[in-house]
Image (cartoon, rainbow, N blue to C red; front, side):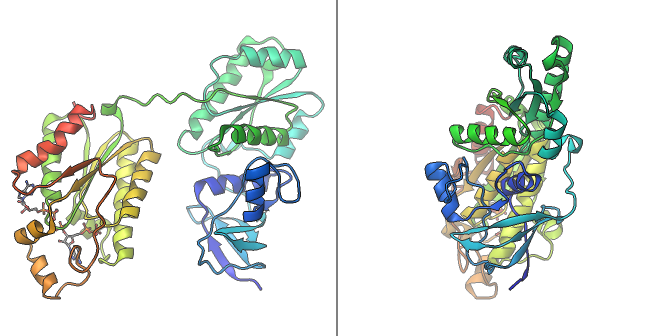
Length: 416
Ligand SMILES: Nc1ncnc2c1ncn2[C@@H]1O[C@H](COP(=O)(O)OS(=O)(=O)O)[C@@H](OP(=O)(O)O)[C@H]1O
Ligand SMILES: Nc1ncnc2c1ncn2[C@@H]1O[C@H](COP(=O)(O)OP(=O)(O)O)[C@@H](O)[C@H]1O
């Protein structure tokens, strides 16, 4: 039986897919099921005994109907079809089976430096190959030069480009190649750079073994792992920041958020993007209602825009109700993924006070049954347990409430 399923894997799975299709994960030709993934994690072999260091899996929701024999077209996030997975097993939340390429994928930055392992092997054949896998700059080239000289080997620099830091690692490899060419006599002087989209594994030993296996697929006869990158985050006032208010309607989110925006503009030390709730609902999220699915989409859109502002070092302020913990956590992840900071401010004014204020008369309408799915009345609000700051505006002046947010931003160095 075949069904025309379509699926967009996450970034890590897409990186694995690219390596599977290129033959860089030889002898693997597809994603593993739970039994192989378990065997690999436990014993470092597939269930048939073939040595392999790390699980290579594709998650599908448990209720996805794909069954053995079905074909799933795998897309990139922009919708371009990349490959077809023929399902041999769908269990434990994983879809297993071989993958076949559909056309040539678009690769983004440094596409010209991504090459099939077979081509690289062919080009470098006949001499020992010293492969250096790298996730950060190679400050000291002496070991590479010495090893290459000793082995009479060609140097193959393999920047492991994954995620936001990917292009920087490739630039570091190109720089290392130029320095080798300028400095070295002989073998290290004509290093080849090939970009490999290998996502890091959390277990360091597993990560190193997988790097070695992949390096072998590109023809390595010897492998050196470059040093772990040292990430030195910029000072807080230069980093992107998203201040994300959450709380019931009438709790004071917009009032405090606007006050914070104005205070920041008066100081003038940061660029500010204010994603006003009404503007969002009228423009970015026009047409969405208050079902869980619509609220989640609304929050994801807000998170997307805020993360884009923060990616470039900006400070974004958002003030939606955002009643669901899982969606707030998604936004935190989106923001942190671009290297920015995320501060969740829970405006924890109790429901009774919000209802007493009832600035827009919505609570009265909700109590009368005129508005359905109203947060706190007929739709849930999940209290955060991961708030960075909690303020109850009951009995506070607006100035005091704004200061309760601004002061920690100054104390934490985000605002000068
Ligand atoms: N059913 C229901 N539930 C909650 N709120 C409702 C509803 N219908 C309309 N409104 C008005 O919409 C504002 C909340 O929109 P948000 O975008 O912040 O909500 S959410 O984060 O998507 O849940 C909220 O504005 P604030 O009072 O500023 O919070 C309400 O005025
Ligand atoms: N300390 C305070 N901080 C924020 N709002 C307050 C405070 N004290 C009273 N309020 C009043 O509470 C209401 C909060 O409304 P709003 O800011 O629109 O809330 P939300 O955006 O959470 O729905 C406003 O009428 C505001 O004047």
